[in-house]
Image 1: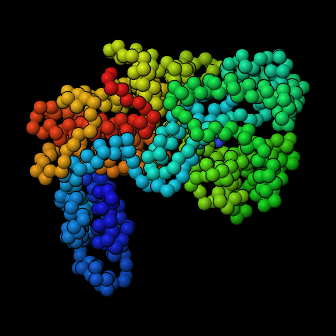
Image 2 (image 1 turned 60 degrees about the vertical axis):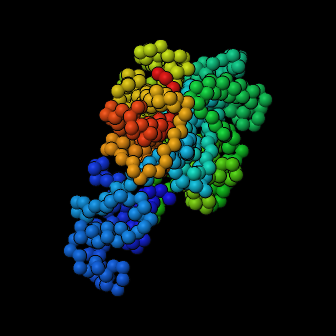
Image 3 (image 1 turned 180 degrees about the vertical axis):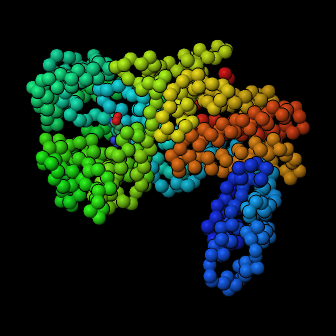
Length: 588
Ligand code: ARG
């Protein structure tokens, strides 16, 4: 059991309630943990007409005047809890009735050693153990360029995937490729019209082909009919249409896979929208039979969201009046498959997709719950990302904005090299550049919109990837100086005599109570908020620098303890960055 759990349990057992919280006080000087139990309890008693004197544990309450007095009584009761007193140095009543706790130094030192022993899992929590999670992210569209939105989804989605991997859950991921829809009718018609060889084309060329064809349709209804026919042929499995479609997929996936490789992302599943094609007729029928779907205008089928005769969400379209299915229909089928397939079935389904699709996902999840019992028993979460701009402009291929997605992904290393003082190798520059770009994305909450600037991403002074990579390198340098270069682990046994100074303590408690106890990774996962990891890492780096500026490490009497702190700081930064999908380097 971790420290916070021991404190919580002791309070709960003593007070026979779980209506209280245990938090870190905002000010370090006020201890390591703080509880509001006295205040909560006091107000509860004050508001109850029933006398509490029957309850032997609580008889004394009747005499108490205020929460502070109650807090003092609680402290007395807690001090006889042996398990608690094994780990707690002192307790103090503060403010209107908070109880503050100081953890024993030896407990912190033990915790540091434990983090070393747990190495790659030192930030793990257990809050999802026994549960299954599916994270869907990236999801680019075939025959269209990989967009900034897909980049954001890939980076945030991968971080969420990693976070849940460290929560005790069994996690899988799915790249929901956009490989179906009437636009393929246009592409096929355009390819056939010009007799093009798709396998020799690039993704931007395919995209232009579609864009131009779409424009011409406005003036020429014949083309619209051609595209419709082509899509029907594709649906029916016509060889020529299938071949063009398959080549579009091959050309696009070659490009996308390069991006995934560069970003170090792999998918266990890549079920494109086309996979759900066959499932849709049955779902539509089921929706009609159960009354979840009703006839709309011109024979379209829609799902209405009404409660007590009032509409709480706009209706969604299941089948268009021309009889074709929609993006919405395919997403319902996707949910069905994810509920049925053993390797996809989960307790929690996370979708990392742009904020512009918020209503769409609300409708999809709600419609599935209306239609299927088992959909009610699981959790769906749309993690929505905002807009990324460059120099205030939305990245647009047509406008020719000067920064391109390729610059962010494939030339990140060059950017890093340009800024680096010393000459660094290509591999190192790549890790720094890509780390900078990813961290710059992850350090803010997913829904925020922001303007991308390389100066900010690569800043060595601020909250950036390179700054943290640099602090990690610093820890490695110190260990090397102490002759411990290749060794990360360092034994420092329990020693009641150890004197821990304030800098050491502040660093140790941040390492143990935030990272080692799993708190940071857990709250980041629970809140779908990788930026909470960034915040804690940045604070750690600053604490470490403060500690190192004021305390010599190598060649002093306190060397052992201080080297332990240095090792664990390095380990926490490395593990934290790994969770964010960012690599570390040994020198920079
Ligand atoms: N391919 C879509 C797009 O680029 C995103 C897919 C999101 N996921 C989903 N299940 N609909 O906009």
